[in-house]
Length: 628
Image 1: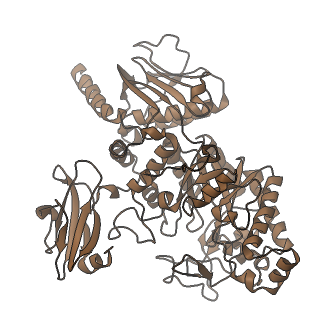
Image 2 (image 1 turned 90 degrees about the vertical axis):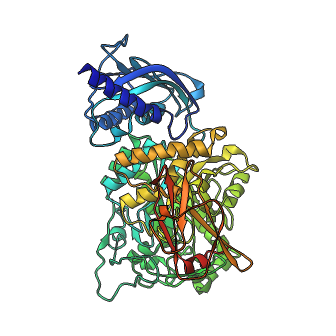
Image 3 (image 1 turned 30 degrees about the vertical axis):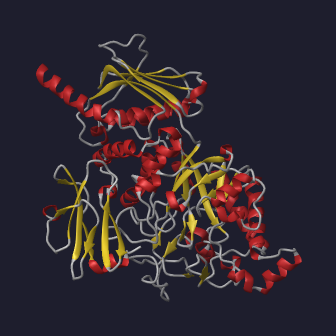
């Protein structure tokens, strides 16, 4: 029996040696020691503070352990020993740790977590979670785990480490939102940007405006990709797809997030992206015509230069005082619900065409000396900011709120690259960097032959290369960074996880770890370890980073193909003669010619003879279209 136990402990040690050095995000300081700590039901929690937040954070960690059949007692352990081991949690005064930092030391009979503030205790516990074997994430953990000794000092680089989830295009239940929050907290994100309203659905109960959810939360059911393949509602067709959160449900989610040190920033998008609101209250538009909640049908014509024309009006009327009464009612209730500092008012992709064609709007602009519709939008944004400020909140909006003049105290979320954020920071405004080029998690992350096609690509390596502080701005104005998941092609929670991770792991590390620690090879090795952790928890994660990156170019009359992969110890094989399996084809060693003919390029990545990525099958005619 002793031999069996020793063997089990040895195996757990070997497993954890691998996990021990694969923390995401990477800590500021990490040192291994010779100690070993066995976590099982004989361990006690010694919480040496009466702080209520610390108690909540410890409780959340205990709930995690209970899933692995480990229940810890709470008691004072003065001198931890072989017979009484302990996890000791305490608040201290150490300036280096600031508000969210912590120290964690795994000793022979003791795990000590210390922090200045309760948030640091929470993050110390999240690091402890990653130090445990991957099996703790599964439903079949043996009920004990060996941890290798270490000393960690850790603290974040940025105060704002966010993810945005769009629940308008597809509705996610309360339990699904909580599951999304759980994974965020595990990797030290602390801001959840909740995109609650858009053209495709209004998701938050506003009691003074009941039609927003009675009408605006529901659309006619449609399947498939958004755009031309989805038809407008038919006459008499019932709107049955959608949903909304009651105010009691909102409060429940806010409390759940707070127990995980996550602040929720609600977004009510306006004056554009308001079709669901206008379906409920069409009188708030310029033309005051009946509207419907968009079921994902095409209702805008986009042009090559990035401009667009709306086919259906989806914009509030900035010249109508009734609109500001509406806005006041909405934000009165939003501000009362959400305890966080900021409210997001959107402000993006606002079409001005209906304003430009309206005699009423033009008359208003002339009377008020408003030179153009950009200044008119600025007029709207500034009035909205005053409303939000009157509720004791600060306003943040997408970078379009810069156009026509930025509201006095507004913060800017820069999504159209870094330019808007740079401009706002130079004006002395707070900025969250969230550029499409690095942080849009709905973008295709692997080859289009195996992924949902969308209008842009974003690889894991590209995301990891993101630096949120441009050289030309004062770093104090950059609050942090955020990844955004728009859900036109994301109808389920598991697919939301697939699209979010592992790119969110890269954002987590950029937001938390110190700049000088950035190292792609180290990160991808740790990410591979995280793949096993996600698998153990039965959470969908993309492994597209393993797959070949296929590039084509013309060299004279020749069509040449290049395969790349930036993961270590990977071999790529391919065939261009319609034969398979591909591992019996040609091992890639350099660019090769794609001959004429009707065939598919088949290519796949392998490590030690085992396939580690999906097989890509690309018809020759599609290869031609990829020529750069």
